[in-house]
Length: 340
Image 1 (cartoon, one colour):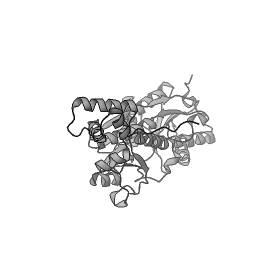
Image 2 (cartoon, helix red, strand yellow):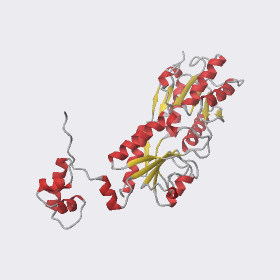
Image 3 (tube, helix red, strand yellow):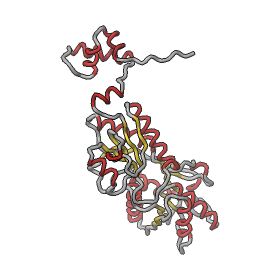
Image 4 (cartoon, one colour):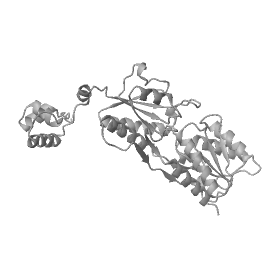
């Protein structure tokens, strides 16, 4: 039977160092009038023993709750279940793991104001995912003096806010270049309404790319939410055009799954007649689609971890960059196989 691991506390450090508990407390918290040699020796012994400060006690001392809130903004668009999207699940799991490592618990809350101060849930800081322009929850938290980090920027408030995000301009250009290299000449963008920085950035980058390459932009904005049904309807309209696209970049992979169904119904072959790429957000693996989908992967795990780390650093008063950019990568699969 494995022995239970003994937690190293301040008393154990004091005994090992041969000093009082008060001396250890002052040494570890940089308080009191101690010789620097004593502080250094106590801290060294604490490190050797594997001492970690008790998060609850620390929070009581500094007047914190030890809770961080997380909510996914859904204002301004059709509601959806965030747990249906692998992107959000991975982001939340990584943020929670990082928060626990820093002595905080992460509270997942709905976006209906549950984190606002009058709701009764007291949090030290909050992560708001994909805020909309003039997001009411972000504004309410900031008015209450609660530190906020967003994943995805608050549209129109990029410089003042603290955020973690991808470079969606560069990512969109990269996926469009990929489609062009694979033979796409009339590339369409299938996107949801322009509510968040992601969709705003993608459409801006797409139009700039089209202008640079002297091609007519072809943008189809879905009207039925982030669903396969929305992708099916939008793809049906695009493929019925007198000059249909020979490549589509869909901003969410549920839209791409719907596009595959529409193409099959219309007898359009992917990738022979239509190249298809998307962003990896869905719980369904892109490898499970037929053909396998080429994706722009946004690394949501790193986004969540970085958001929690940035929030804790801000709460601790550390000098830290207010903006963190997480890299993306393209996973090329059969849906954009090079044409002969």
